[in-house]
Image 1: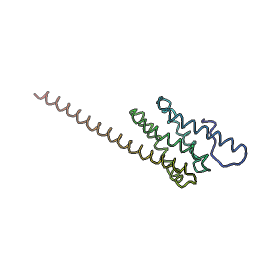
Image 2: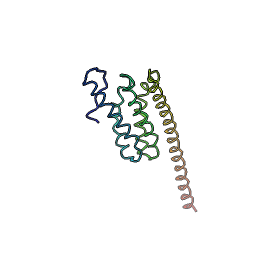
Image 3: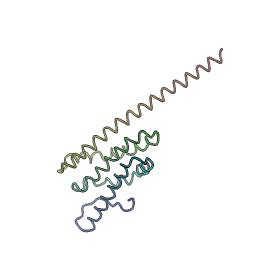
Image 4: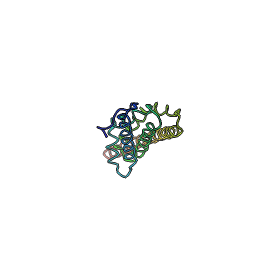
Length: 170
């Protein structure tokens, strides 16, 4: 996929059509791999290939529904994978952050898809935006919980320290 993914350009010749079909297959494959939740390792590998994911979503506004739909589906799969990865602790949080950065980078193109002529593209972009907002709220709650746990454990640690100090004084 890394080698075969070509820039998204509009060309009406045979080679241009072949590039589009190949890109669409690669983007669909990436989306399917992100949807495969039974193997966190594969999600981690794919999520760390941010350059590939960036190139795969480069042509959202290049042409019509045939180009935009698979790329929006890939963004949607990224948002869902980011939400799921928060349950995997620190490595999952790092993966989610990388995916959210990419989703935020593609936010202007996703918003522009809301005015697309295709109802399917408009609905899919709405779904992606909803997933991004939901993922951000989960990320905020995750960070808040981690912060509270750290704060709580610091108090416990100091509490133990104080108990030990008091014990030595006695």
